[in-house]
Amino acid sequence: MHIDVCDLRDFYYRTGLGRAAQRAIRAQMLALWPEAKAQTVVGFGFAAPLLRPYLGQARRMVALMPGQQGVMHWPAGQPNISVLSDELWWPLQTGMADKLVMMHGLENCDNTPALLDEAARVLGPGGRALFIVPNRGGIWARSDQTPFGSGHPYTLGQLDALLTAHGFQSERHAVALFQPPSHRRFWLKSGPLWERVGQKLSNRYAGGVLLLEASRQLFRPRGTPATETQRIPLRVLEGVPQTARNAAPDRSAKPS
Image (tube, rainbow, N blue to C red; front, side, top):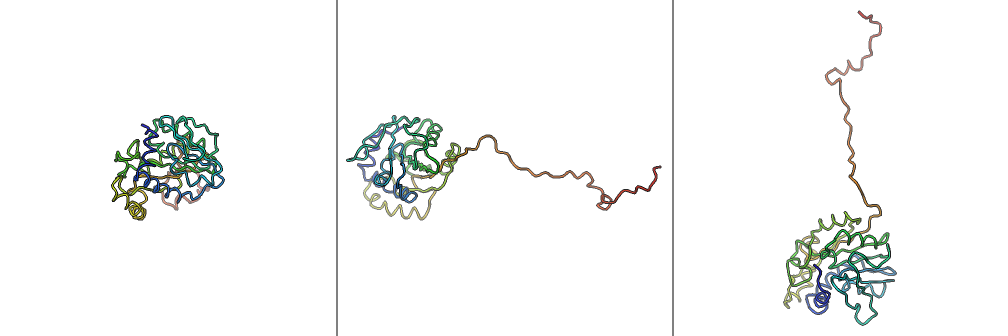
């Protein structure tokens, strides 16, 4: 089930918790991808809050928003680069993206295989995709106060297996949102401390959101993998002494 774009906009731009989540996730994205100079950057779902650092350096940027969610003008105060798109048919050329950021897209999609196939089509050789999803083991996936409480959460292993099955190779991962998903002032003020401590304690289980970087496999494995076996020779003379096996036959003996 998709979240309405107005609800996403209100959360990320008009609440303290949403702005804190935006900063925490963006910090981990920039740790993986510090720059995007002269590259084509594509966002899908509601990735717009994360893409602003690349606005002044990317060669081309587009923020795709699925029709079931709706679209909004972005970035504010500048020429619009957001596009309302069919979830499974993106209006982009094959192989044009150098960087693809997907947030609030994968966990809400009803046809995940088709969505991932479209993402693989758009990603160019050497390009990287960043999939941002709710962490099944985190408390944000169990809270109705944030958009990460909607849709299908994942463990890191589940997400890795899903991407591998659809033509991606996992590269690196990160975790964000260690602070509780609460709008209370105390938790908001202590949010940066929670993030620093959480990053030191765990990069897999405790955070509310998983970020998995993946590249596109040029040759997707098909069929049933063959296993290599070692042949063991059949020892038909196992009970005969070694000297008897190696002895030359006596050809001078006459047959009886």
